[in-house]
Amino acid sequence: MAIIYISLGSNINREENTRAGIHALKSAFGELVLSSVYESEAVGFSGDAFYNMVISCQVSMPVHETNQVLRDIEDANGRDRSGPKFSSRTLDLDLLLYDDLQLDEDGLKLPRGEILKNAFVLWPLAEIAPDLKHPEVGSNYAELWSAFDKSKEKLRPIEFIF
Image (cartoon, rainbow, N blue to C red; front, side):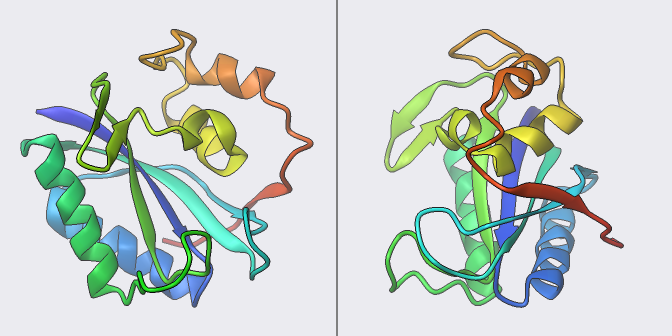
């Protein structure tokens, strides 16, 4: 069994799609560990604010199969891949970590670069896995969040009823 971490984001019907994404992940993988939900501004484009969170679970399937399950869940929830990379989305599920695997093949890079670049990924990851070490830089996520330049993005935890 591998422990994985997934970033979930939505800025179209975000409450409904966040719940749908959590439900689909639970159906696919079983028990989930959920971070708080955070509201953040769109990054890389002008658009509505996102709901973001990080989810952890255990999987028995290989990494590429796991990533395909995430793509299938996005598609089942109306993900439109025809627009620009940085655009509004119903549901965005990104595989952040698969154990401590370091990989860059077939369009999948692990650990995912957004971990170190975006507060909306690092803060919820540090919340649910503070002592886990980033497989490339060696620091744990609590240390990385503590050192992160928090002035770059506006991010706030919100009350969200799962």
